[in-house]
Image 1 (spheres, rainbow, N blue to C red):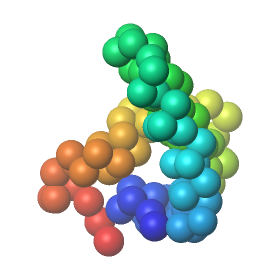
Image 2: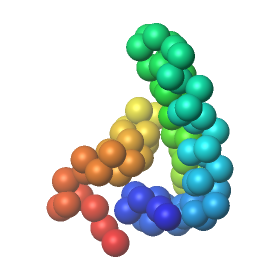
Image 3: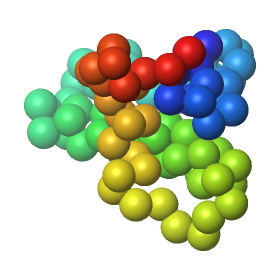
Image 4: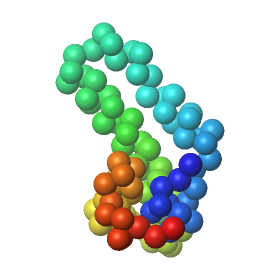
Length: 89
């Protein structure tokens, strides 16, 4: 599985790798937490996934740092919010 942005950058997460990342979210453990705790934990886990994708892109782009403009398309693709005219397959 990969996002269209990931395909552009040559990044492709294998299904097993993505499944392992999603398993790490441990959603069952969240039933006993408050809304704020759940949101904080989900944000932290999601950040790990985004960082992984961003690091893959950064290394392929040959750059030392990531900028907000680099990460926004990753997030848009992840959530399916990127306008179709901007995506390339």
